[in-house]
Length: 569
Image 1 (tube, rainbow, N blue to C red):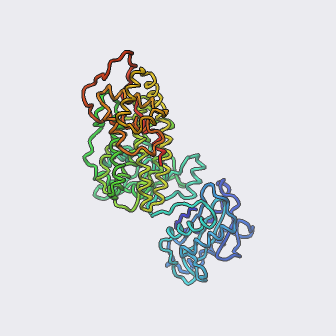
Image 2 (cartoon, rainbow, N blue to C red):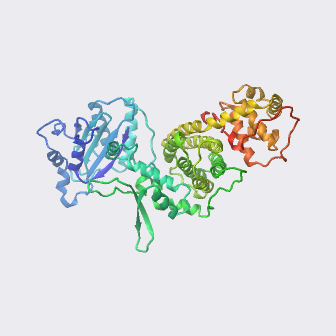
Image 3 (cartoon, helix red, strand yellow):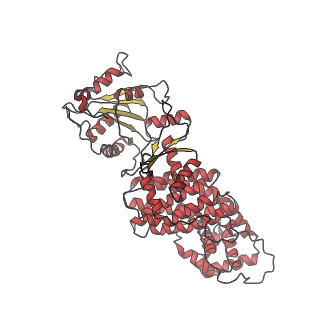
């Protein structure tokens, strides 16, 4: 159950919206479910009642103050049930309205001097509570932190009414779209509101941007209107963005400042990121991979940076971890805008969910996000990955470590009582798993085919390598469906000059007990280690071959993730 407190200045204007049905399909049978006076005439049910009379009744004490009345005297709080919740009766909604008003201090129980208010229902899943912020004794209500208090009361109501229990927030969430914004998006056929779409555009433009100029250039390149607030000195003080074609009734663009999109998207907060990463090198990526394309190199660099972030989340330094989460969000945004098809769709959803997990009240040491912002920059500037061959394998590799990191982020937040952030990270992980599955199928199939084509003598040799390096896992590994893929990557590693110590190193990186497929986990650890570690010696054959060896695929073509490990725990 979600309350959303706001304030306005025109009571009658809000009433016209709440009772309007002609151009808003979602508004059905508008009527009062409760009011400060149970006998108040209802324009939705009483043909003789008018909006002007109802507005005058609600504004009575406001008008009595004259010039001393507050300018924004209209208190507005839609309360909505979660998708899948049962419909509440009018009587239940009346109870909800009364409890929210009492909890916020607008109309405490038993207070005959309380503010005047009504609750209007015009849809099955929500009501709108409207109050005027002057009491009968001509004083203001004590409604400090009314949004937080409304949220807390709704958590209690959810439990008592048997509704879906939402997570408590900490005041760091982005502002939710209003009902009017949601209805407008529905009328325009948009998947999300303009506010939400603009937030996504700004995050994408920010991912790995080196400075303000690049940030604003990226926004313009995405077709977003940008308006800067300039000081007399010529310095930029802030910015606002608008979607092309999104206009109000007067035909003017509807602007949103960065801070209205999300707390961390104000220009001063964005500048903090730039200040912490002022010496980021220009692309392309610096990681040397023989014969690899720029997108592949960039993704392998992102694997290294994300793996460091994963370590930070368990190291006990909260300031460093908070910064790493911001950087992880930028890498996700960069991957989302350089992918294709189903992978891109899932990555955009993952990035949108994880955005909530990047903010908390814990101070972030921005310098700690250097490597991740650099990785996001490399991914963005390297171009799009095609989703097949080396590109697909490298994308799958970074998605694997990203899933583990996001799961670790969920646990990190949960341990600190950040319920909304933990849930957002879990939702992001689900979309990352789907993106991984869409990306990894082709590289994994190629690797299995390669392993199956190996001569019998080679397969026996690699089985002996596994028994030497991992005697306690050898039988289990050979029984798994991923054994052919593991055999393939062991063969490739040997041809590159590695020995059994590489397998032992891969197994020792992290625990394996929770993996659904230990063999596939080892495949991806080996693949990555084979890229970033120097071979023990020059490529050599460790035994005579009596049968021709199959063609060796390009290294990244057989790269895959620690498959299924995303689903552990």
